[in-house]
Every structure is written in C-alpha cells, then in structure tokens.
Length: 360
Ligand code: KG4
Ligand code: ZN
Image 1 (cartoon, rainbow, N blue to C red):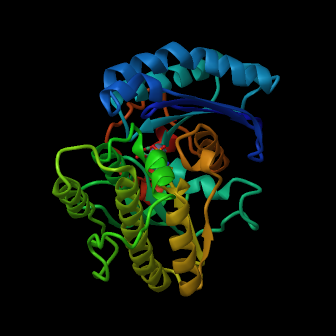
Image 2: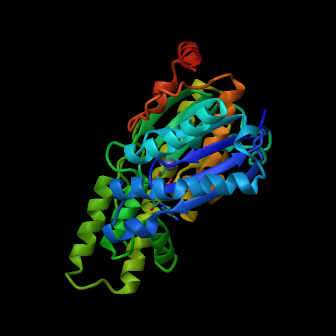
C-alpha cells in the first residue's frame, strides 16, 4: 500500500503524520495548544477550533515535505472524525476530505478511540504486532474505559467511568493543589517528593464486580483534606504528600479494575494475553508500575506504548487508516464528524463493513 496521511484535531492537539504502507513513520508533527488554554484552566472549544485551523495546513505541508511526498503519492487520507470537540473535528475532517477530493484518494473517517486502541499494533512496538484479541485500558482526560479489542471495528466495552475520567481527576486535584493545567504531569512531579502513605484516601470501586470506575468521591476526599488545613496555601511538603497519596489511590484503583477486566477477558477470549494501556494517564510512572504488577499477577503482558504515542497524536490516526484501508474500508466524503461516537457503535461487524463500502 502507498503511504497514508493521518490528521488529529479532536481536542487540543493538532497533529499530522505520514506512515508508509507497512506502518513505518515517515514524518510526524504535533502542535500542542496547551499555552492557549492554560489561562482558562481547561480546553476552550472555540479557541481550540481556531487554533487547529491556523496551524493544520502548515503542519500537513511540513510532514509531506519531510516525507518527500506529494499528495498524489498517497494511498489514502485518514482523520479523526469523533468523538471530540466538533469544531476541531470539522477542521481536520474538511482538510482531509479536501485533499482526498482534489487528488482522488480514499478517505477514512477514523474513530479517535479506535486509533488509541490500535496503536499497540504499530509495527515495532510489540513482538508479533499485538494480535487480536487484547484488552485495552484507555485512561485519558476525556475517557476511562476497559475495552475488549477483537478486531478492526470490533470492540466491546467491558466497563467505564461512572463520573470523571482518570485524567480529569488528576487535573482537578492538581488545581486544588495550586498546580497549573494540564495537571497530570505537574502532579506526578510533585508526588515524587511526597509520602504516599501520609493520607489514606478512599479507593472507589475497589474489589467491586465488573470493571467500572468512579473518581468523584476520591476528588472530594482530596478537596476535604485540603480544606482541613485551612485557607492559606499548603506547605509544599504537605502538598507533595497529598499528591503522592492521591496518585497511589488512583494507581491502586486502576490496577484493581484492570485485574477485574483481565479476568472478564479470560472468560471472553482465553487466548488473550495482552493488557494495552493508552491515553495521557498512561504516561504516569506509578500507574504504569501498578498496571505492570497487576498484569503479571494475571498472566498478561503489559503493553505501554511510548508516551508520545499514548497522548493524542496523528501516527495512531494514520495507522488506524491503514488498518481499515487494508480491509477495503473507506468512507464517503459525506461522512459527518460525530462529537459522540462510542467504540461499540463500530461493532456492527459485517453489516457495518458493507454499509461503509457502499458509502465509499
Ligand atoms: O490522551 P490525552 O493527551 O488527551 C485526552 O484527554 O484525550 O490525555 C490528557 C490527560 C490530562 O488529563 C493529563 O492531566 C493526563 O492525561 N496526564 C497525566 C500525565 N500526563 C498526562 N496524568 C497523570 N500523570 C501524568 N504524567
Ligand atoms: Zn485521545
């Protein structure tokens, strides 16, 4: 297959990448909008959409130039078409469709969650290229779920959060501790200097049947602990202990829920033996260590892609495009981006495949 261009614009990272037909990265680029949103303490959708529009054309030209390709050399164009913020999704989809239309290329509307799910199959990451089926734990700022990944377009959600996503909990607790946004990396740095045994925070859902998550009670417990120490700024040593204690609680909960999910996976598919972690929270060392230990106990191997492939990027979008193009799956240029687009909506098997080929 000829190289494929991937575009990511579903949240606050604008990214473009070109992969050759075997999935080797020829060029990639990510422009973070963190600085634009930081003053507001979170992503502002209107600012995000305008920023995608401002930088995406140059980003695409840049990766094509570094890959020494012109659009006519491509075998297809893939863009995240949901779930995510609709303004950004429209920008990325329209750029991809414009290139596809002008150069008569196949277009693939990629589900952003499926792109995270398929990252483990990028050549070179896992020996044997992560054969289906495997278990995915997706832990990002917007998502927290366990998914049985059974094939391209075939995913079964085993459980998910009932309130906040894990990354959202990190961001909210970081705010309580007076750290900047996004809070995950700053909180991890602070926690490295703290004592994780100082505060016994609750472990919501620990031991509970299934693999659902809940983080709002833990966040409230941190808020109460911070308030207990009065209105003045927390001494740094105390803030570090709270950060470390919170991080340990999240890691314990994620490891417990993943253990339950692995047991469920064993029943669904006894041959499954990989636990793949994706999303920004997968960058956290304590989380990775806890998941690694849980996987080992369950006889699974943990696959934690490099951090730059765990957070939002276009390599995973191009790769998801390649996986679909290999199966002959393309989308029509009338495909409308979807702010809400659950992974289970792809699981229509043959019917969905047939429908997509008709549209294409
Ligand atoms: O996957 P991602 O880049 O974007 C989406 O949300 O889709 O994830 C960002 C989230 C943020 O909530 C951020 O605070 C969290 O991942 N995060 C971390 C770390 N790095 C990023 N959380 C904990 N520890 C980290 N080192
Ligand atoms: Zn993401």
